[in-house]
Image 1 (cartoon, rainbow, N blue to C red):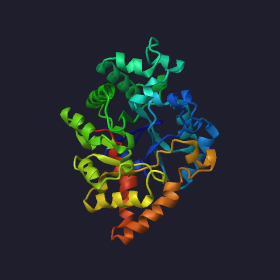
Image 2: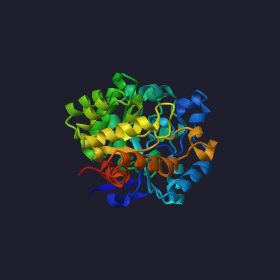
Image 3: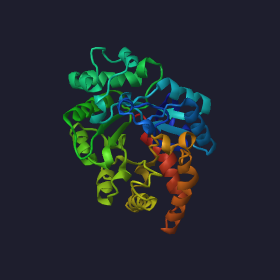
Image 4: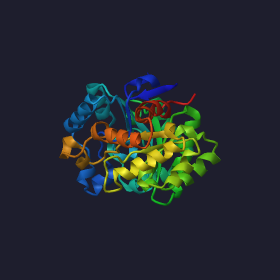
Length: 331
């Protein structure tokens, strides 16, 4: 297939194995630090490491860490987790959604972001699209935050039921970067909204949508909407597994099987977006990263078989074959 860029180097797509498509392993989001939202701070190395050790024991081989520069990532820490566990971890360049950008830029980032800017908002507002593009490219080609660890995907995000002018700016920066370095693109959709509007922008730029993965599709459990996204050839990430407060698992599984009936099983990836202490077993005795493979997959297989599907084939698509294509650089 293609080449996958992990924090510890490039691997063949066939080496990726069972993959979670969207997680956060260790991060202290600056916006949530300022708001004193303790639950959103994954800030204990031993806890994060233990969670990943337990995940590796299930047979999961790879994790996409979707933490961008504006969400409090610590590249060195996550790279150390990769080294100690043997997991293939894919890092993320690019940007998140607009409201997070009011946070102050920490001193450690002034080696890569001009020190004249106090907030991410000021930096993005004042920078040209070309400057932001070059920043993204540097994170993929040279290293993230002054390290030698390279990002393996590039990201943009939009807010709930709206796309701000600055978010449009970052979309264009990601598009321009993709045209040069051919990295896979990840889209954050707040509550699963605005994917179709994002698609209009991407199509106007001539982007092949098979290079794009739209996150949080299960936050908007609308089969018609999902089909419209899938019709473009893009990937759909169902990454809220275990979050019953948003929807029961029956709804997610029904949405996924509906797409499979329509022939889109090769465009689905699965994960948990496990970004709170209370979601982690090692932090607060939550469900943990292993829940998806240990508990959700058996349930999905049962429901898929009852519905007349080849359940083993679908799981192989969602966790092995589809990620191997989705996270490959496009030649």
